[in-house]
Length: 151
Image (tube, rainbow, N blue to C red):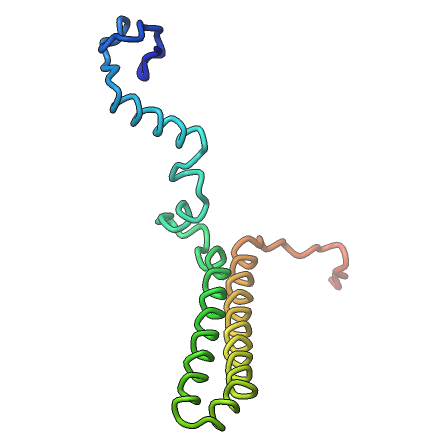
């Protein structure tokens, strides 16, 4: 058995490491093994760009650009939920209105909500990308080669 702290080889029935004295008990080994696997998989704060951007106190990165897909997926889900509720409410009112909502009303409501949220999110995305582009642009001095001086 190998020590989880220093990696030294120990006997299989040893309770403590012969090199560093660390505990070799089973619960500690399982915990250390899981921590080592998660660390090797790269699941840390600095390797997840969203979390790194979320807790960036200098505001060098926009979080909105990273979560826009999640917001759009949530808007599609909520549009489907609203369409389903409208179908149920239609059938609750009358059979004719329920069939109308099923065939015409609910798909129209769904498409309008998705279209509205898509356009709104694209406008927001455009504004953020424009701001990001303008922040990265450096003004170049004008060239004086084409200027004619009349002295």
